Length: 339
Length: 275
Image (cartoon, rainbow over all chains, first blue to last red; front, side):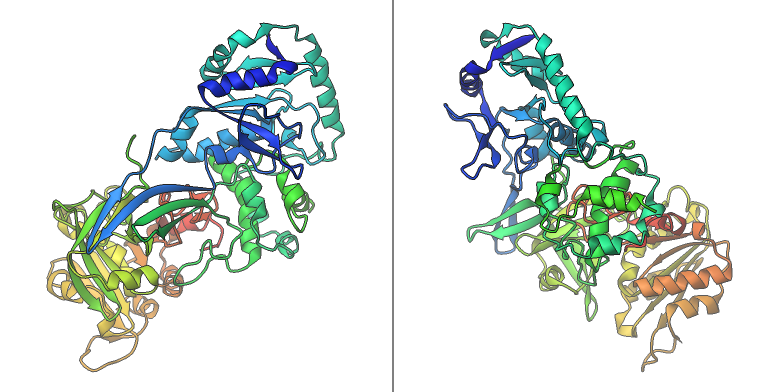
């Protein structure tokens, strides 16, 4: 298996960045990890995951869809789309890598979202196997093996070296592009590292969480459950869960008058917000109960109903650590199951 | 790059008809003339004034109209206020067509049709009514039961009087909520009028109007012996993308913009009651 010594990582990053834009998880001053455009000398974060998910790369928080020039009664439509530059996201975790295939099901289904596809076509996802899963992790619940992540190319850390495994043509192209820095290495130690990580996963607090009682056929069973009132009672409707969630993909379209013309933006939106469904004549989801229910029913019932049983969650655990009232999908699943 | 449905076309408002005190019907054409795109009855389009807003409206003209599209719009919010203030010649942006359509070429073919509308609810049905009037040989009897608050609030009143009522095999029953001077027709609410008229239960029903009207009319139809499988309606929810991606009009595993807006009542019954 091809590898590079971890002492030569910066050489590797420089080589990648010489050919295309490289994004790397790095530590902020406050200790949190976030993706940054690589500049020579930067060190990759050792944190398990970034605070924000990696969905920004393909579905940014805001983006300009189209511009308009208004003059008297006339309107001119200005297509502002540009071909994306090639880029590499390095060090993506297995949960976030899976979220891309979930977002694909939304944005690449007919009619294809050209904004998303453009970035997807030009981005190479290089994943990093997890060696030390955290107590908020439950990706295994959704059939994800964090020790063998998806993505275009997967990387494995045995403590001293990083090993490379291309999953597809794009990944192979990436490996070929850095081949001069790679050498054949003995990957035997990797099996031990993976074994250790899997042993940790078995002992995690959420290891037993199962999707067995959820899926596309559970609408009537759960929609009218009397559990929603209690679960949603303290929800602030802040939308933090949807913003840190790698699979939440609801969006808003808004115009901004620059004084010289109109810029139309797409921005992340949240089904947790009261005006999400508000119309001139009323609102079908009047209270936080309905909004709260929508988010979890969508992930656990509606999405699987439309996507061959695949759930709209990857078990990254971000909502567990970020919700200001400590509510999350795990608590919802457990409460609904408990009849 | 390929066209993207989120990037709109330009349409020109070439005629504005004042239907009622708060409803206007806008004729929209491509800048070079003709229609911006083809559609089927019941489908919708996103209209926008950039900087003001964008919203989904049913296309009220029939696909058999080969020259232009029409939108009947009630003034009830920010964007619609602006649309009502437009003058002929104003450009707007249009994208679509979105959603499914009434099954005019399949399930409705050969059937006796009963249209029931309240207020602005006639707008989406007008597309179907004019479609079946233009393809008369494909359908059985047509009956339209239409009601509004007052005579002045009847949308398309002149077209109803001059064209629909003079057609053979088209029966039109109008009603208004309260008696008024200059009205010698029926007075009363739509649900009760439907029961009074006691239409044949062999008819296939297409219904659109305020939720409360739909609710009571459906109950009345069931009393008369109609089944949910023979009643269609069209829904409205807040929408942004029009293609089932922005998440806004999601009910159960359906997106009203993409899987609807037309639903049969037995299909609606399978969805959560959240609309």
